[in-house]
Image 1 (cartoon, helix red, strand yellow):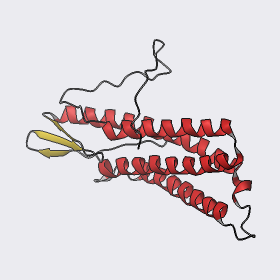
Image 2 (cartoon, one colour; image 1 turned 135 degrees about the vertical axis):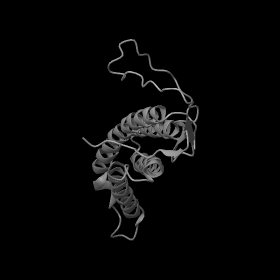
Image 3 (cartoon, rainbow, N blue to C red; image 1 turned 180 degrees about the vertical axis):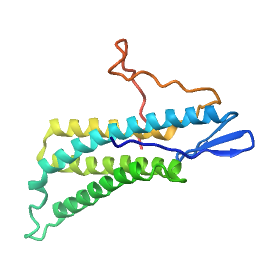
Length: 197
């Protein structure tokens, strides 16, 4: 199964650091704690890449559902929809490549840095595709689909915030991963304030 597996820990004497691509430096007094943090980070990032992949599949289906509308008017000199098609195709291809880079190169020395950068670019690309699709749905006055696009943008923005904020409140103590939502019967979703870009 594809997953994120970061490995790089910098050691200077008895101090061990895990630097991440979201700008955090997490310092630990023992190698065991640093390894535990890396394991927790791997679980977190794998969970987030799964979430992003689900959104990517929804976005791809929405794009394909609108594919017939994108080329209209090109022969009459109105290339707006044709440009939207080209933009979507480019973003979809780039996003697909970023998913592959995230899972294939995460174990490199600079993998700790680039995985976060790749996931951030994936969120940006998904948001841009959804905004393009919202324009198309807006031209057709399809209110239900526009609400679906709004929901996707909110999900992408929430994931971006989670990825960017990861490790910013870390200490040298062990991190306990929460049980997966589907395994926790007492889970109640919390409302979160989203940072609008």
